[in-house]
Length: 265
Image (cartoon, rainbow, N blue to C red; front, side, top):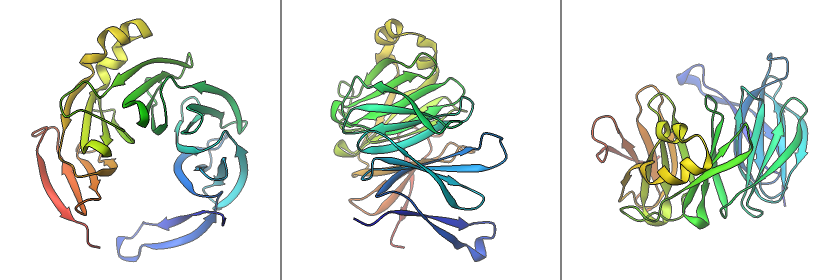
């Protein structure tokens, strides 16, 4: 099987956007994260290479590969806490998370997930919490980055518009909201990050977890990807069944898709 690659794109001028370089990675790079070098002088790029069970470390200035870190099978998604210098990698096959120290570029330890098929992963840098979508158990795992403990799971299946198979997540830290898509049931779930932060420990989390989901937005027609505009709070969700991008403005009317863009291009 051929090696994978990523492209570095120059976006300084919208009129002349072009690909700067093609950077080799491992096989099937499925997740990407950007951090800083140990001396805080260089942007570093990390890719999770699903079919070669590795993490590529790339110098963001030279666009050259620096190192390959071997990890457990099937790394899917990746994110970094730039405050603690920890890189988190989800593994769908072993139901674990690898934690990599970006200073030493070595796997520091592994966190065993209490759920199955972890995929989407995001880090709350301020609270040092890691949120992981568990596709096969219809839940979101919340991990304390300090204690390395899974403090709880937010089940999606008990709520209106029953959730199944969450795959991706974005966090709006300014508005203290998390947004999760579940393609198999065409939903997007909105969770309350403030309530989760205040839970503190596993016992409190499990007692209060039914209050963490604010709302489920249905009828998104097989949502596949999600992105956040942190400046205005708008959520962008692609729907593969009807080839559109759904734009959702939670602050105006939480269940109103205010615009559809036909994505023929």
